[in-house]
Amino acid sequence: METEIIAMYAFSIIHMFVGFALAPLMIGIVNRTKAVFAGRTGQPFLQPYYDMVKLLRKGAVYSRTTSWIFRAAPVVGLACAVAALAIVPFGNAPGLLSFEGDLVFFAYVLGLWRFFLVIAALDTGSAFEGMGASREVQFSAMAEPVLFVGLATVATLTGSLSLSDMIAGLSLPLAEIVLVAAALFVVFLCENARIPFDDPNTHLELTMIHEVMVLDYSGPDLGFVLYSAALKFWVLGALIIGITVPLDEGLPVWASCGYAFLGMVMLALLTGIVESVMARVRLLRVPQLLAAAGALAICALIFSMR
Image (cartoon, rainbow, N blue to C red; front, side, top):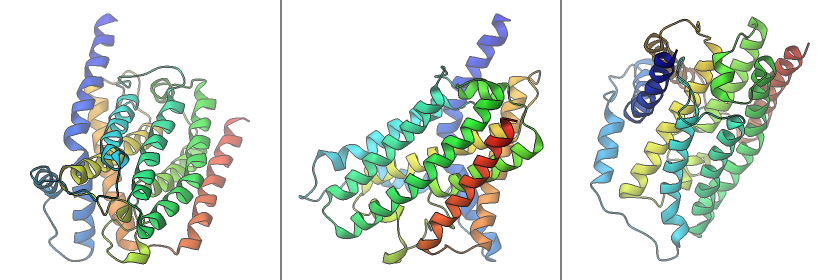
């Protein structure tokens, strides 16, 4: 028994390093999938790594209108991403920082990350970045309740407020799986600034949201922002995979982690497919889309309380 516990926490530590190493690869898979659908060869799978290394070798330029908040935001964002990665389980391996109520801490860590990005954008004094920050806050105000209700559904079915215990003891009926998965996937796309909410590759002023908030960053700071975004993609993806793909508790930890990684690859492919077959929706349609996701999450919660 002690050997199994040690092995589980060893894999939790390994998951941390795997997340650090492979999170940018998920972005590369999304971009390559979009290129295939567009009939192009596309960039290499490792292109996000090349871009981040190139940025780390450059120097940073700061506007004289900015304060320490602007310089601290990328570091705080990276720290929040690492903390979220330590909380989320992967396969049958529990989170490295697992405790009762960590799902609330998980949500607020992501909220702290967004808060610093928003005030850093406002710190530049740019009306353009302020517009993107206001849209980011509007979207998050509607996405976070959906995330909480979806997690509340799982907590109700498992009787635990710890993400590791929730996913380890998860046995959702098919109806709840479909509803929670659909709701959380919408939140996943919104939180990661993907289509149909935002286009990460756009350069049109009136359609930029997340990208406009980091326009003034350069060099290592921009590299930290991009790497933090990749970790966020991995963290939220691991949460969705853990909820929607229940694994047998008797499955070896290494095998469960392997299945979870395959699930992450499939999620990245699905994200690329969604971005290839859909267009970015109008700003006024975003509340309707998130409200629909919220309705699905509420239905799942009601079914779980029967």
